[in-house]
Length: 325
View (cartoon, rainbow, N blue to C red):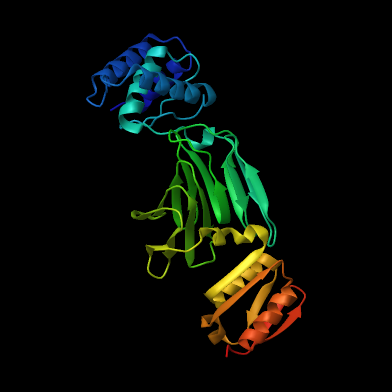
């Protein structure tokens, strides 16, 4: 166990201060690290080189922050003066114990948000295209470094991912983590909704619950993986044409026996309004409808004629009365 005083001396030595006592402490620590059983001498030179590069990025860009927290609970702080020996040995430890991509703080991220009714398109460094639906946000790295291509979604987006087996593409959303190596798929996962869907158009997609990776599914073209909060589970199903999942890109809408609670939320995102439903029983009714580039008034008229409800528009608020017939 290293004492506070020894920690101070070692930190000063690694920061460049000449100190026989600091050098002795460093040599002692280096020797114990070398003799540690978790040291991995069988790793390849290529793996060591990559690990050394990662460690050097840490040391050169984070001079005054902890690099690794050891079991002795003292924080190693290193400057550029840290020796190559230290980098090499830490690299072996990195391979044997951690073997992870660069920490997120070393990547530069950008966030794009859309309002209700808006769409946006993002092209990543590798040529992958991301199409963002309304009332959604997407956080993505400006440079695709590390072992994965990792983006963060709130809402809905359609992805056309450039194939790269060596660097899987991961979409993290409220309820799901979706992993691909190159394919086209749609992720629908709004925070306010009790249901989330991943639909595959081409390729193969792995989906897992964000808080329970053991619950997962592997889906192929024209298949859907659905999360339901009531059951806290994933289910897998087949559909006739997965392209219907991205009709929103052309402002086409299909409701196939959709519960009205979900219908109203989708319409709120499309038209930037809020619905006030006077009869809660209406929320459990289902609706079959389709329309393209329709105005809010046209959609409400269709709803009125098919369900028998009444509506009133007051600015950004829509009041719904009645019950489905």
